[in-house]
Length: 183
Image 1 (tube, one colour):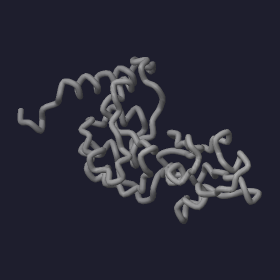
Image 2 (cartoon, helix red, strand yellow):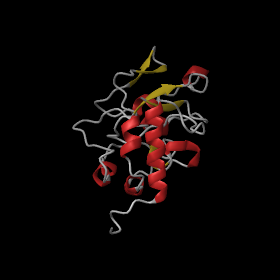
Image 3 (cartoon, one colour):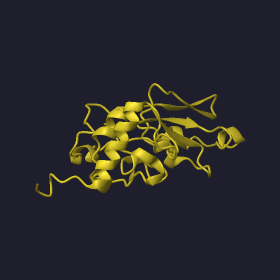
Image 4 (cartoon, one colour):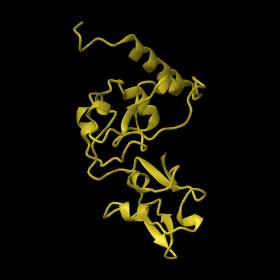
């Protein structure tokens, strides 16, 4: 068996844990904190957990540095990639897809949503009486998922949002008033 055919013990155990998770339909490892946003082109979560080899190539290749690898606190998802919008936004360059050896990430013709933005009104400057609108101005042309209503308040059209995270990056509130949630 050459080096390319070898499977590390960690990868094998993680894959076995993912299979057990899928077979039982229950969360095997109660340490999973919450669902995460996967990189562009990710298969459905159960398929993704079975298919991803946890090689880390997608994270290394991410030009924006937003793809990280799940740690031990994510149970059976250990070593799988997720998108961290506190670092930057995703520009759907598909570099991660190009280097994925397992096809856990697949190229699509158009950006398929990886998440959905949600405004946290209790943090949003506009809902606190200040003038802002940075989030709406940052929404990519052609997407137009974010707009201002009543000349003041940001509103998200969930049907158009692709979860790129531009709005998170441009949000002036601290802590951020917009979060991207998995779909």
